[in-house]
Length: 78
Image 1: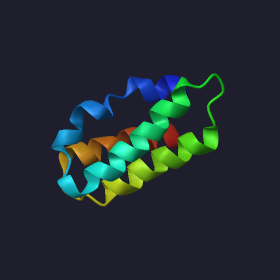
Image 2: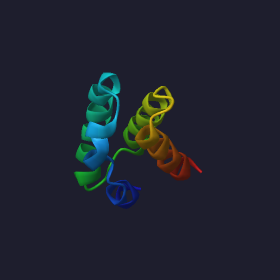
Image 3: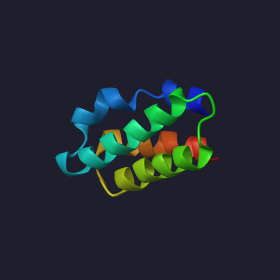
Image 4: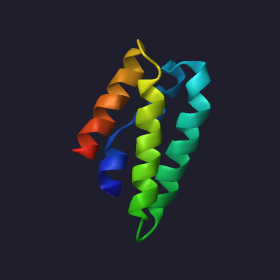
């Protein structure tokens, strides 16, 4: 799973997200990065952070970048 996380360049597009959701996304991305560096990442932490990103972006209705992030997260959860 950590390889999939590295494949999605969400971080590059944070500035395109609505300001009010950026802090939540940055926090969740930090968890993803920290866990993905570990030799044995905690899958529950990874899934929780991805879920947080997805939920936060779903709340940003109408934002194209947020919609793309929701789509990527949905692919991972399949």
